[in-house]
Image (cartoon, rainbow, N blue to C red; front, side, top):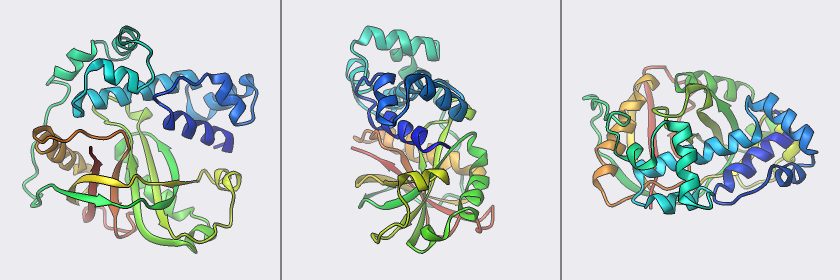
Length: 278
């Protein structure tokens, strides 16, 4: 993916509460508006404005379900000037009002708890980790394949700094984000030494440098196949966080792998699911 488009995606995702114009974003990444629009749509499959609108509304949907905030507060947090404008946009995307979405139990059915999950959710405070990340779009069932691609194509200058573990960053809930639009970052933790590549060099390999959020997380261990990971998410979200005083924070969830998920046996993964909370 073009380095400038990766930068634009990062700018949009880090500024959901503001109202940047496409002209401003194009200028920040060194493109004319025409070329920015063309490159973005070719790389991502939707226009920059459509992408920003979608990730704002999907972030709002997560907050409606997992945060104890009013609709007006959520509207402001994702960059809408008024609750009325937010409600219209939300209705257009989801076919219902924000309040109805929040209360729609059919949209949020708890999955049956897997009896093989013998672990109870627990709280943990995490430091920030420096990572090299690669963005993927697509269905969650492709995550194991994404990990193989990521690990196989890691350049030597990243491997030399790698100190483990591997981290997956989960941005969307596949219960309402269309499968082809789900965002997932494969990451490897690296040390604090000098990286032998700048942002442009990394982007030519579809990579970027990021840092994970420091702070409080609620965690759940998942053991088994990735195909069953939804049950573990449901356990911590629907059966723990929903009955706690916590709200899920805006940052992506973390899938923490001590061993490389690219080489682990498909049915024998051990993943620490970490959901940011406040």
